[in-house]
Image (cartoon, rainbow, N blue to C red; front, side, top):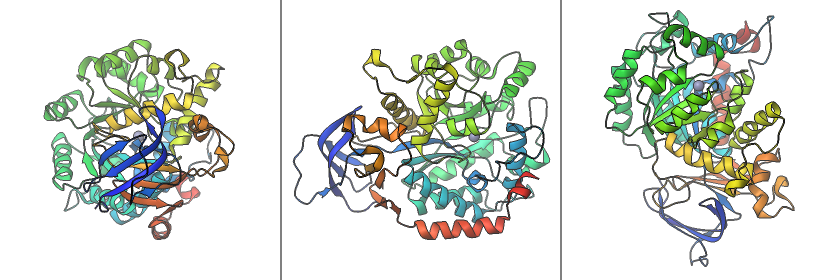
Length: 467
Ligand SMILES: [Zn+2]
């Protein structure tokens, strides 16, 4: 529930890609912005915010349960460690987590995401069944745990039940350690509709396909057909690993993004997660389709995925967003920094994302504005940010943060992304509710205690996780 209608006033706010002064913000009873007006005097009865405000960003790709694994996969026990060995370890964690533990882990994650500047999270959810693979009496048991966690933390949720059918292009079914993920097109549609039927104002639902290797072409076609006329998002992992590109080529004669562009009727609802290994032709095809791309820079670095062709994605005008994916990082400032740093390291240039020729010399501004708009699309929002009709979300910047001291405000976005560490979000408003005040999440201590207790019951440590 939103707090009663409220009137806020900020000394500066980020509106339409620039700082505006003296901004009045009015929250409607439904938790959305009813009025956003710059150059306004402080109205009587308004809450005067202590610093400039930014809109919250969407975290466009998350697997909440993997928060339990962060920090437990950073030791190498054998000669070689890569994405696929990491995935085997991750599956062992996935096989241990029940609904109560998922709720505790996700609550901690979601509270951290709010403190990290995200106010909406797209949950790519494939942990559907009991540990032994049996169906729960209530098939939404695990989904409901995520919905409760989002409500407890106070973050917006876009739940994406995942179609997951086979272990690889040449396999008919799943591996035994993938037994909790099994789902049909009918399951995914039923689960999506059941989440929507709850009519929770901050919970939205779309659908996802795990990957081309995990769903047969006929199933993908059937899911797309079932979504005809619906404007909810459709997410898919694609081309994260070169091995996956090779397997797709061997099975279909086409590269993964090429296959999607040729056979999946891509449109603006589609979000291609990772898209790390994309040719120029594939990027152009995605641009023509209107689909977006979700990059997860810290996870892609952690897993050794590779470096995306960011300059070409940006030049093609493809909608771009970021996700925390494996939860190794839970702040968008770090994701945007890593997004450009990977380019700098590989190209041996600086400020790769900046576009001075388009009047945007700031790398941080280019990436922030791109991911603000792209994230909204990934989460299924037509209105987002500090604009009328969008969810009443914002981040109040702590003007005393060390990273901002002595800098003119025109460089604040640059410093927020490229000067670290720092704790810049003093207060966070989500759906018209203050969920973080003076750097503290309203329920943060209890959520952290429950998370710690859940971790103890999971019994994970590096020897078990890596064994
Ligand atoms: Zn993922």
